[in-house]
Structures are given as structure tokens and as C-alpha cells.
Image (cartoon, rainbow, N blue to C red; front, side, top):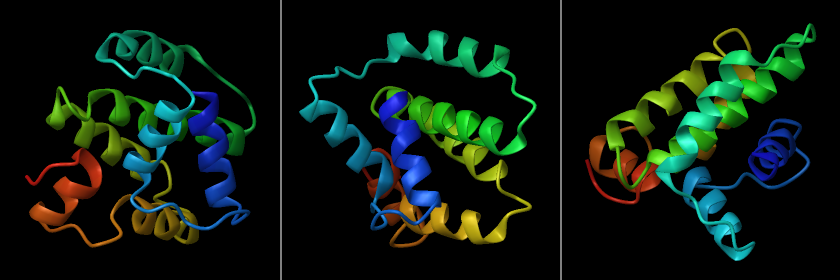
Length: 127
């Protein structure tokens, strides 16, 4: 979660180059660190995102976004529908911040949102 959070924070603050497509880049980064991503992490991540609070809206948005992207990564190979739901949830966090929403969309879906390309970019397989 911390790796994802730092990646999202850097991406949204424009401290780094956009990582495209974001989910495979994160999965690769975690793999290089020796972190095995599995669906068994879902319950813990869901519990964390549902119980964590912070009065700072920006911090809370970062936590939620990081959890949603983490959940999308965890479910990408085993439950594509859940993974796509978490991506949508992530994007919904920025419905009022169009500049950051644009950055996230371009990073998550660099080739657009058509089924073939979106599937490849989000799930590593066509829809």
C-alpha cells in the first residue's frame, strides 16, 4: 500500500513522469521488490479503506485512491470485474478535481477506454 501511495502521490504532484499504464507498472514495481500480490490481500485493504479517517480531505483522498488502486491490482488477474470497479471508485474520488482526474485517466488508460485497450492496460488482457 505504501508503494502505491507514494506512486500516486508523485504522479498527482507531477514529481515524476506519468507511469503508463499505471496498474502494470505498479505490479512490476511490487514484483521487483519481492512483494507477492494476491487476492488474499483484498479483505485487509477493504477493511483499511473503510475504517480509516482523516480530517484532511486531501490526505483522505490519497489514502482512498491508493487503496482502490491496490485493490484493482490485487484483483486484476483473478476478478476482472472487481478490479474495474475499484478503478472506477478511484476515478470517482477526483470528480471535482479535473486536473488530477485527467492525470489519473491518462496514466490508467493511456490508449483510451475502448474494451481491447482498456483491458490490456488495466488487466493485462483484452476485455
